[in-house]
Image (cartoon, rainbow, N blue to C red; front, side, top):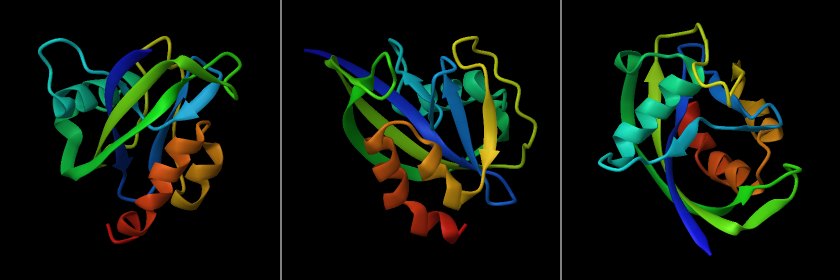
Length: 142
């Protein structure tokens, strides 16, 4: 089985909304992506957030590392897991003063701000939903 290492973030704006991104136009997730050679997880998370949302890294403020979880890759169709590839995801919590979203990555054509209570309904993968819901109480305190 192939293992991929990815990093991403839960990004919160001043209105308390959460950044979610479209993956290839067929599924929704929190912004994340592969950790490239020579990168650490935090650097990769910031880079991926900028690529998938257009929010400059300089406008992200790290709150803390949230932790790691594993899941299988989203398949085609997105409701079915690709069990040939396991992903280990490292996530961080960020705040930003940015509102404008303009994705730079053509594989992730849409980004949007979503109310906290609606995020879990939008996320495609059940383990993404569970990870987000695990941290929802902490987000209420920001």
